[in-house]
Image 1 (cartoon, rainbow, N blue to C red):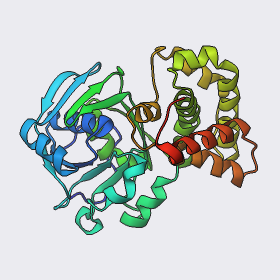
Image 2 (image 1 turned 135 degrees about the vertical axis):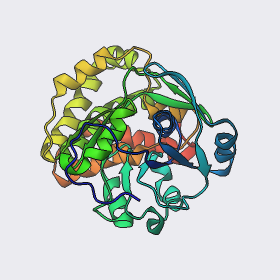
Image 3 (image 1 turned 90 degrees about the vertical axis):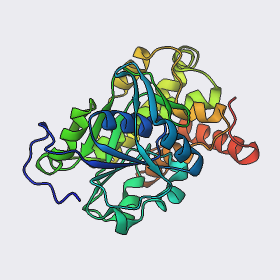
Length: 316
């Protein structure tokens, strides 16, 4: 079991293989499970029974723009039954309460718990369950999708994670991820790290999902609305104490391949529950706390909530 890390630098070799649990081996979790297994670590995927059967039989199959094609053998179970060094929480926010029942706090023991979810409010949920000392908030930047149980399509030529904490404390964790090919940085400002992603993700998710358009069409056909929503998200981020640059965000959208879709849009198209509350709802709650007007965000969230509540996720 992993004891409290101390003075190891944020880069450098791991001195032994780690045991890693991955809660939710989907697009993000499955990719990380594959590359960590390939790097020599013991990986236990925690999922539902149908997924567990596939993973035990076939392993994780990844087709990646960054890592190439790989098949990795992993262990799989419906519940974590032994302590691990690291538990990656890589599920959708909509599934969080039920999924956490698969990872009992007394079993995790001294292992790190690293949530890689969308939104800004989940770290406190994890701290309440596992203790503040073990939870390391994280942000991942990657485009990766589960096309079938155990089958992962990784489209981006990068996989980047920001961890929040002291570099000297998180050095061993960062080293394990780096060695597996995941560019990893350690930051000391949780608010800035989480809002950097949400301020970028919320406009992308809300507009692509509401209109059923890829980002290329949004940035041309809905340019004014996109700019207004980016400005709102940046204003809320700054009010919460996190720097934000609307011009930089728009430039990032302009650099995206035109056919890029948000994960929320893909969920809507597949009829899956939307992470609307974790993304749009969190933005509105923060805006309300700081008295920041967000008319565009409020309208889009309200419209998406109506569609979800009345007939399931819809794309207009």
